[in-house]
Image (cartoon, one colour):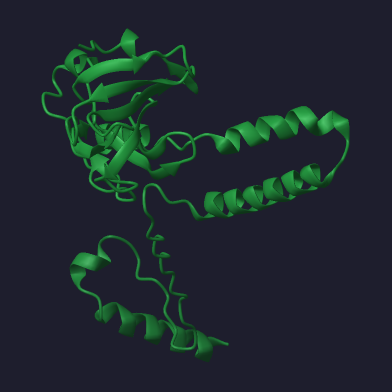
Length: 252
């Protein structure tokens, strides 16, 4: 027993010699035996993450979205009249246009740069004068042939032949193509959630999802039946309702 104690004291003495005096004065030298090794604890590296990214939340959203789609699919397969109002509400929500212009405008104000998912959102000149931006410009020079009361959506104007139609204010083109009742049409969505419709065009000069500034040429008017004048259809939609353009634009 005493022999074992002598060996331990020798080992402690030997270990003390390996430490500098500066280290010894801070406390007794810990007992270290070659037969035992102290466990090494390493701090786990922090997961690298994006400030807008949360893996658990992302997975939860995916599962919630899948569950919602499943519930809606089951609901639309049901013939119960009790679900008719819910089905109607879902249909109206899905038919609404996504507000590209409003989202792009909000994102740029919050983060100081255009939304990457959309084309660069060009600022309208004189942004320091919002009142002027809300003062809509006449898209084309002409006189009114049919007023708002005829179809409850827009007006028809008589213009010169080959007259170029201009965007009344900046926004994002959400439609550029043919509509059954008004022919070649361009629809522009604006940051205030409104839309302007430019119809009865002979030629379209913009593309869907294109950013346009106020005054940008969007198309050329079509010819009248006589071929001596041009005709142009114009409408303004605000909060899912069409309003009389005469109320917001001064026509000659």
